[in-house]
Amino acid sequence: MEKIDQKKALKDGFFDFRVQRSGVWQVLRFGIVREKIAQGNVPFIVPDRIVDLPQLRIVCELAQLPLKCQAGILVPKGKMLADFAGK
Image (tube, rainbow, N blue to C red; front, side):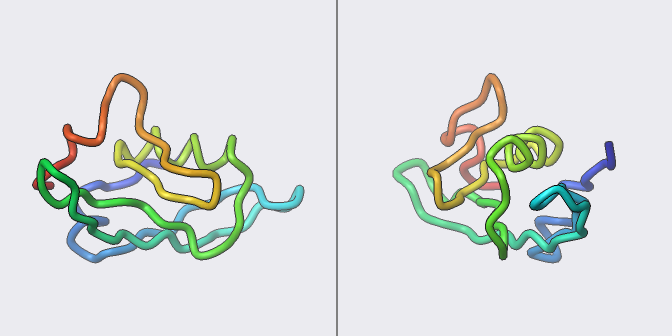
């Protein structure tokens, strides 16, 4: 799997990653938006296209950032949203 540089992604506000969509491998751009929660601002990965949930889970784990999609919010294993406040 490819590595995702978290610091660069947070600075640029996006990153490109190779995912499988409808049986075809594609490089998609994932944006990063910040939303306010009770503990502070949290950066969320937001895909620009519809992607299958297992692929989104992989992106979430590799980036170690929460991901917001049409199915809900995904958080890396062993973490919660408050862990990302202020990043």
